[in-house]
Amino acid sequence: MPAAPTYLDNHATTRVDPRVLEAMSPYFCDEFGNAGSVVHRYGERARGAVDAAREVIAAAIGAEPSEIVFTSGATESNNLAIRGVAERSRRRGDHVLSVSTEHRAVLDPLARLSRRDYSITLVGVAPHGRTDAGLVDAAEFAAALTDQTALASVMLANNEIGVIQPLAELAAACRAAGVPLHCDATQAVGKLPVDVRTLGVDLMSFTAHKIYGPKGVGALYVRRSRPAVRLEPLIAGGGQEGGLRSGTLNVPGIVGFARAVELCQAELADEMSRLAALRNQLWRLLVETVPGVELCGPALDAVDASGRPLRLPGNLDVAFGDVDGEALMLAMPELAVSSGAACSSTDPAPSHVLLALGLSEDRARSTLRFGLGRFTTAEQIETAARTVAAAVQKLRSFAG
Image (cartoon, rainbow, N blue to C red; front, side, top):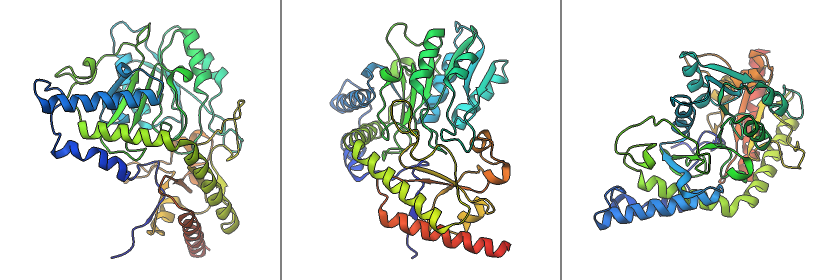
């Protein structure tokens, strides 16, 4: 049986940490109660486990436990935040402001709203080649807010190019205009220090499977302090989660989510430093062994005005110029990475993120995204660089 590929696709999903699995295990067979059935011991213990998990997750992001709504993942959280605000009968207007490089889990709900006569504005970002490539200009963002803006939505860290947006500045502009701000923090929670009060966001989506927890469970932070954010529920039923998200709670998943968050918090500083060093090592090796490689997104050493990095520590997005990213992945079955191009048999378009940076379609299709994670080793980085270099050389020899 062939060896498993070297896994460098941690932005897509992560392996469940054995310590997370250990915490979840009792809630499948022994403590299997429904958290809504509080009239007996099984239900009470399940509810107690959910309450404890909610406290851990809330504390990790600077929120109150009552401000955490459990969902099936970040996509549902994004939909609940965006559509939940926009579809309330007493919203302030029919305009929504966002950014051209958002994840499809934000852009697609916005497109749905646009088909219902909502006005959608997507501000641009700093272009490819700049040190701050992918960054939103706070002044341009503030200028796009109007008295009809019902909601703004900006991701904290980009899933392709790793750029970290100036959320606190954007939130200040939204607050001054009286506009609630939603943040998709899927790639940031557990990988960066994230505090909802410091950021000033009103709604924030995140999920477990990006931080070594299980798939199928996520959360939405909903600010409860005055004035509280009001949402229209998307799922009606038993009234769970304060009536915002009906359905039987995924107790094992929620317990695992909390344990994953707990571990990330405990190991955050060391892990950020370790992943940044490995990411920089991979880039150096690629530059040394593959002619014509080009970095997509902000510079690896770029920082903001306060000295904080502008890029996720485990993120590297690289363009190979004359080599197609999909072909390159197919030539490297021993390496698990993602292409920057969101290609499928029905949608051959290149990555909208890279196009928003100003890359040509051919250039955008030549990219690979490397996502480093907790289980990535220095040996795997060296193996990955050698594998990529050999595959690029092979494909270029065929083209030549």
